[in-house]
Length: 110
Image (cartoon, rainbow, N blue to C red; front, side, top):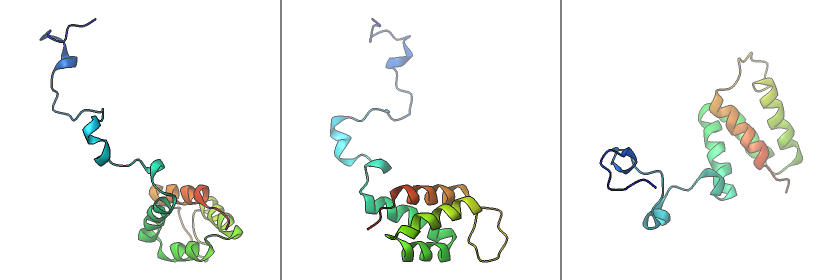
């Protein structure tokens, strides 16, 4: 067992970085991980990312949201790399693609 009073043991020295462990006092104010956020907050976060880069696509997703066709639309966007409006696209930025994939997994048919 290491001696906590050993001045040569770096595990017991301050490094200047915050601790990776949450103290009991900090638990109520710690940032909430994405997977613990309420469903609607997660959906809103992904929609905000898409709307920031592609307003028309975000509006179309909002229109289809809750319908069976929404997941199919999201999958087509993911696979084609863009909206089917005749414009050539290289693809989506990684954060937009991630948001589309997350929305497809969060979608529930009402």
